Structure formats: structure tokens, C-alpha cells
Image (cartoon, rainbow over all chains, first blue to last red; front, side, top):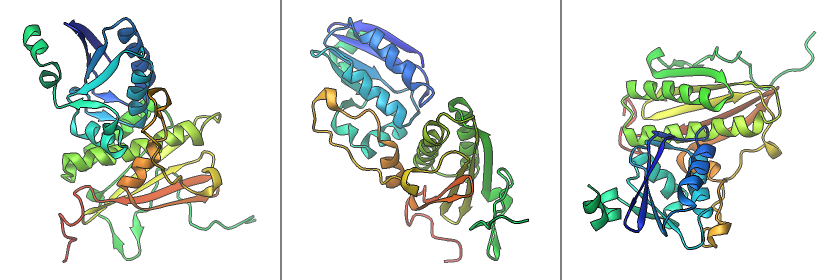
Length: 115
Length: 177
């Protein structure tokens, strides 16, 4: 899973490039998220709009990515596709994360400045 | 000399007998795939299963949930049943009968703990960030998304069977009604 990162004002936007966040991708995803967040600003937004499939291993890796943040950092999610959203809601993990419908909504004015 | 009898006739993996009683499911409504218990092999097997569901015109939301269930069960086989053993095979069989998919997953790994399929309990989420669960979601989803789930150990083989209605209950009345 390819991850791209860029900073927009006080938010780091990380874009997941692969279409499957599954058992085969989970460990590398979590490691790469650590690399991309450890020196980041307080707010991290993960754009998952390219991820069409996620299993429980992938969900565990997203939770792990949040748990390994610095105490003052937050991880928010954006652009969940229907199957991925369903995995979050079936496990009630949608109550743990702030989930935005898309990146534009998540970033607001920052997005306008970035595009 | 026959040493023992098995509770069910065992077909070799990959040679499923799809007949059940008097009715026979047409070839176009059934699918099977046998693959090595490996995460990347599983991806390919799931892709084939999803192509099959496309031929049945299963709606995308239902298709995604079937893929999640099959992935969770197969991942458990890879991580638990075959853990520390020589790599084995997994077989997935799917049959469509009216609005219902009947799925069977076979493997030759270790039996499930206690001889029963896990219940899939919701874990506490109102906890500190550091205490949030990173696993244990698989059986929770399997139990929420499937019906009529049964597990049986036959000889050296695990056999998990369940049904799903990927179009949702009541959307497609059974044929003949």
C-alpha cells in the first residue's frame, strides 16, 4: 500500500494509494504510518477514498496507527468507501474515529489553499 | 480394512459434490476455488469469488460483505489452523439458491479451540486510546453478517458452512414464490 503525505497548514494529509488494506498489507501500512506521523503536526487526516476493501487486519492496523501517535496527535479518517465504512460500523469503530465524508470536508479552508 | 467411519462422506478438496437431495444447483450458480493458505494467494482466490458474484449480479454492498466474511474466515485459517504447520490448502465453495448464498470453507489445519466456532464478542471501546483493541473483530463481523453458521471437524478437516443473503432479506423472493 502506497502512502503519500503532505502538510496543509496545521494538518498532515496522508493519502492511501492501494485498493486493499488487508492481512497482506496491514503490517507495512502500520509501519509506514508510523514513519509518516511521528514527526507530524497535531492533526493527521488519512484519505481512504482509494481503498475499496479492508478486512479486520486492516482495521486493526488503522487502530494501531492511531495508538502509536504522540499523545497530542489525533488521527481522523476521510473518504471511506462503502465496504470500508461498513467494517467500521459493524465493529462500532466508527464511534472511536472522527470520520469525514471526503477530504474537502476534512480540510475545509486548508483544502482550498492546497488545490 | 476400514479402521473407522466418518460422519460425512469426504470429497477430496477441489472435487465438491454439489448435489444435495433431489435438486442440483446449475453449474452457473456454483463456484469453488482451492488455494495455498497464504495471504497473497487468498487475494487471488477472493478476486475469483468476486468475479463469480458479479456473474450472479450480486449488488456491490452485498458483494463487499461476502468478501469480508470469506477473507476473515480464510485469514483465521492461515493465522490459526495452519500456524506452525506445513502450509496447507484452503477450499472455498459458494452456491446460489434463490436469494441465498451457501458457503463452505474447508481446511486441513488444526481444529478450532473447544471444537466450536468463536462467538465474536464486542470489546469495550470506551477505553483509553492505548487500550483500544487491534484485533478480535473478525468473528464479530462473521457472526453479524452470516446466518446458519456451523462448524464440524471431519477426520483431519475443518468444515465451516454458513449462508448469506447479499441482497438483504426479502429483496428477492425465492424462485417459485
